[in-house]
Length: 582
Image (cartoon, rainbow, N blue to C red; front, side, top):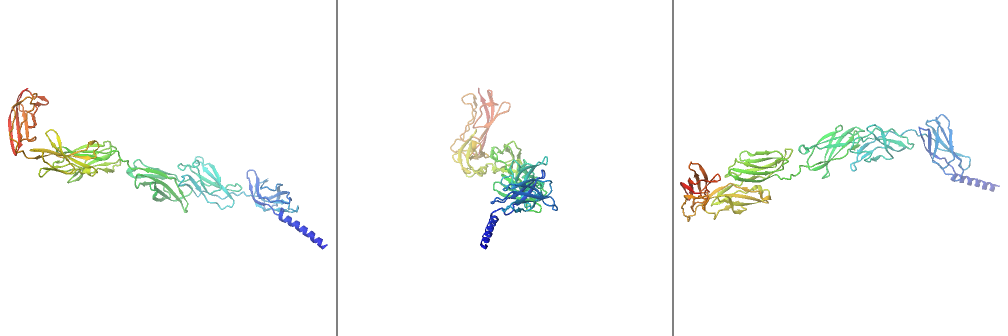
């Protein structure tokens, strides 16, 4: 009997243990109860239990709308494996609810869940920490701090319409940082207003925050920035918190170096920036710092290109300084017609002084300087070009005239043409001799001296012609002053002066001239008078007169001549008459 009892007890214990280990032995866990305040329906979220012994019949839901009232049956469901239960409440108070599970594996006991109150409290107020422009993507970004609520499920992001003030839902995400598309917020346009609100697991939404707007930066480059070296920068203040300081950053794009970080007051929204140099691109942005915080907001980046004046097509230059007439120096100058220029002369007493100024639109000039003694002076000249700002842009090298002088014994000396030499050109010098009607080149040298030999006798006239190389279009040359050098006389030549008594301008001998082997061109002059004492010709007696006056052949008749000759260290005068026979 005792053994039978032990077996029965063991069996019951075994069955009980089976029920305890594997049956419906504990309640469901009620996670939250969410109320739709519009309809009055409540949704219960729970974790159901398994029922391997198949004892489950139903869940019963109990609740009360006041702590002083007893719980009442609100409804039931026969679905075991459900995660949600929906009930329609009689009012929209803050109900306390629990769930009773029927039955345990013994078919008698039930299990009571935890009791929770309906979640109708919205999350705490939250707003953006900062709305900014991403330095790399140049898109609007926003960030915020998670509120202390334990049941935050995400955030609603709104774009506030600046024209109506309406909140337009952009997205709902469980993030604390968001990168907005250009279609949502244009970083270089006004009206970028972001507001946010947190929501919990019951979709209870918190208050929508005040909006935050990022900084919008604008850079204005004046047309005369090259002259004033300044640009204007302005920006809209950050909206959402008060600004402690604004930091203006300037970065050289070419070197990728920050060249300025200028701290400004929190109320400053504009700045006139002085350009440190030109011919580069600068990137500008402003970073604002929140009062009492390390939080900042960065504006959009604006790139401003500030090229310097372009190199002119026409180089500022003095092509040549040349003596073309006695005591008159020609200065041939060229420069960019878009700019102004000034031509200067170096006065031994007053140093450099202005000869002539040129307004834009000219670009070239041949200036005649007639205040020099070209037989004794070397005069320096330079041309300075000024840009449209009136600032000196560039200058030529110093150019000067060639001064020819007689050396001993019977040689030519002159100064180098340094204007061309300082420009990297080479200079060759032609020695030219006057033959009575034109200049003939009798020699060439790169040096600045020339010995006269085999050049005949008597007084000869010389000048120097400088030629630079390279010489585009062969338009550059420089003539020196002219000098006369007495080369002496040929002692073997007879000293007999022959003067004709008549000639025929249209005949075989059409020229009236003297003949003397001892007299050279330039040593004898001739004057012809008509019967009324008028001078009708004046010239070189060796070259002679062709019998014309004002382009027409003179009438047949007698004319008076006066001839003066200086040669062989003596001076002779011949007077008489000449008959024209036509």
